[in-house]
Image 1 (cartoon, helix red, strand yellow):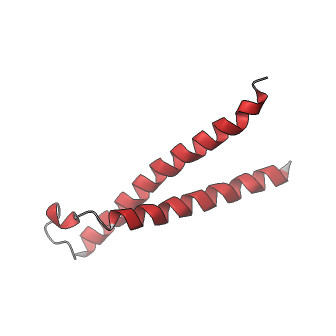
Image 2 (spheres, one colour):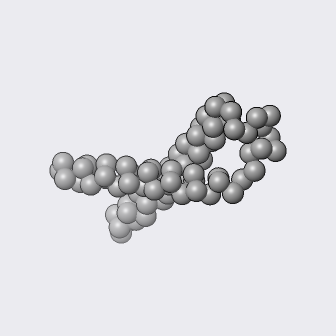
Image 3 (cartoon, rainbow, N blue to C red):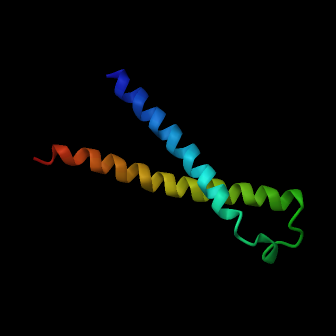
Length: 77
């Protein structure tokens, strides 16, 4: 029983960190200097971090929901 919970927790942690890294990498191509007064200020860096966390949370939540739904399809029949 606890093995499944541990495996699921490990998958969640791995997916969250993976999408956090992918989102950070992808947002490096976005020009924040067009929307921020001082692009090298600490406030701009904090905004970049918060946007990365928010987008990564949305993407990983979608992926994990899809994964959980697809694993439950075996109980359909």
